[in-house]
Length: 369
Image (cartoon, rainbow, N blue to C red; front, side, top):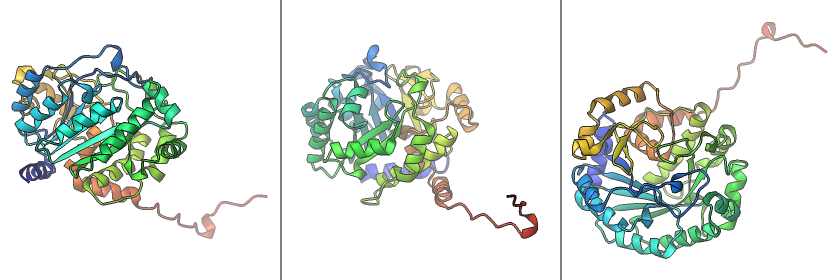
């Protein structure tokens, strides 16, 4: 209960302009068993900090209440459970999430079981499934990748813990965006263990420091935007906070794709922050702008975001002088940190366009044969 209250307090304070990040995306390692087409980290992966340094980092940031551990393939890290335990013991984290390609089903199940033994109120795991078997295996660069990811999803769902939420993550990129609706239909047909509400959509972004990918990897604005506008939000099985965030993200994704600008004021370096495997602070997962080495600030995010470099980047963010993005890593904290602006924006998005007023006869154009 204390962790939930801390998270709720953080979210409420963020709506009044607090500047200490409570949500962190931490790239623990870039090592991964996949060879993904839209990500090039596997070509020269950085292993990430050692366990002792990770413990010092979390000890310096006890205020964190929302943590995204990512990579690479974070669950394959040999010290994964110890890393999570360090975070849970040193901080007041309420929600922890991580993505996985799900290529080691039994090992992933065992490690998630171990994490569930910790006093962590909510654990969210997203298993990547970027299309039916042929498409997914081609994107992941591994034969049988779809089958292993599906096995991982089923194993985690079968754990049946009320503290565990498992989603299937479908990332739209130039590699699978030819027919978004058909892609989703084919995926659901090939994976009878999936429900429509299990799907979490994401948009590939050009992010050299995060994926070392290329600009041509991003999805087609029109095709994906039209799909998300019509079908992206899905239906709510239950009106949970996560389900509401998913719907809001999908609804506003169309706005982002139409303009390539964040539909809401960005919360980077205010409610959220991004740290790479060398403990370098960046504004977010999309802006390739290294700010500082956290070691120079005794690993403290609260001190780092008050630095001259971070303040300058924040001013540029507020002025819209950044690449612009709408990834869940950045969009979800922006939605949480700005509940009222988000609600108003969604109402405008849902409001039908007013019917055109018929012109009076004297103003109507001449009709010609």
